Length: 114
Image 1 (cartoon, helix red, strand yellow):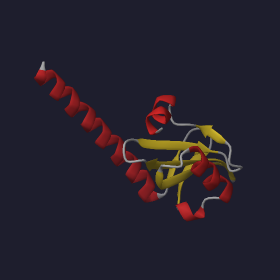
Image 2 (image 1 turned 30 degrees about the horizontal axis):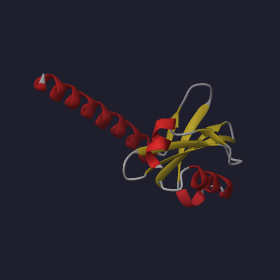
Image 3 (image 1 turned 60 degrees about the vertical axis):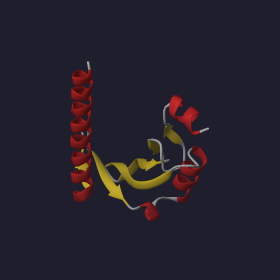
Image 4 (image 1 turned 180 degrees about the vertical axis):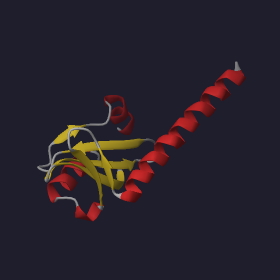
């Protein structure tokens, strides 16, 4: 049983490393193409609109955001995705340019933070 658990843990760790490496490569180049003419572009936190920063701080006050990207369709920014951590878990928020939360952390994750 212990061997099976350690194998599952190793497989999950390898998957996580693979996903992080793919994401890091996309951030290094700054752009990642998606279907239907959409592009993901890396953006510096200091370049985020004030409405996005305010919404993120209100939704997740204990999270330290470390990276962000924007979803662009044509020349229009559709949304911003912010990545951060509160020390216990990783958090991703998706916010419209006007500051509306489009995707929140899971309810269970919010309960842990309280």
